[in-house]
Length: 397
Image 1 (cartoon, rainbow, N blue to C red):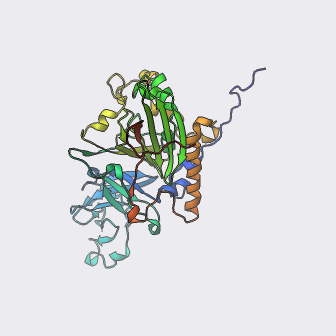
Image 2: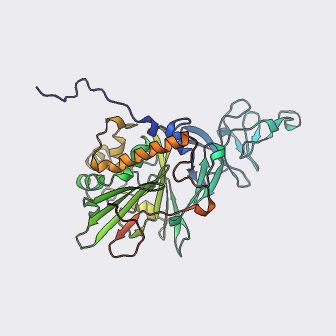
Image 3: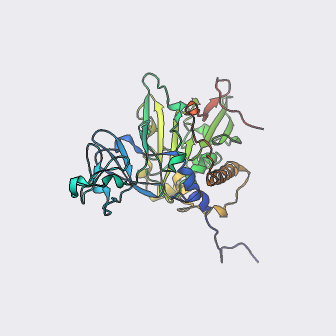
């Protein structure tokens, strides 16, 4: 008698400790120990903008004197949304009764009250700290007493002549739409899965990158102080040896060298930012002499972008989005059968669990920066060719 049919199949649950991101969830609290990019700087204007980040609904605005604010939308007076408010010189005015709040939530004015509010200083609209750097607005959504420094990244510093700092939130690296409609972890852990490249991006869909990327690599996975990395070796047909390094840094940074095999340290890094448990965005920063560099890097099929393909073409030429989205809105992690080639994914999940325990015990998680002398983070990801000078890591034993 045949066995193993799907009759009576009962599927196990996702690993919600790792997948969920809302307030009070295990990994959601880890994410809140770091600064998160929440918008492009040019999106912070005098027109209020609704944001959803880590399961929280917020309102972003820029005062007329240039300060950026990120507030809880429900007005502390009687609950009207500040999304409909008017932005003024020092803050945002609620459309209902005109209460004004500055970027740190202080109530500046209550126009319907005697003397503009005799006790207005007692009112505080919930708010979050924000900073601007690299053309992005960063927010800290965590416990105030544990707020770290906002780090810098060496690959984005000291631009050379003619170089541009490029900001992108259209999903570069996601292989699909700008707003990705599944759990963020399905994408983030894919960074540590180099073995899918010669299958998904070559055997199934043609050379989505370069012919060299279709070669099956020899891979070593390693823990770092900030996350996990893979070192991939490929013997090329011209006799060169390619050493390709990809890494994840906690809590949600992806460092993937150009799949077009630009040599040296990568000039591209990105943050996989959950909006909630089933939606995320990728905020990507790059440096290049071509301001359209990232747009040109996006995978296309027959010269057409992903959004122009029909369902039959998506099925016949799947990419990262199709493979990861088809795992479901939240993958059933406990149904996975991890093998030796999934070592990087297993290492990442274990390290995530360690950060959850550390934060629960009041400790700082991996990579959180509190010392200004260590605020510039070295990025080690890149494409390195044998015989060329570099300082990238070598494979472990």
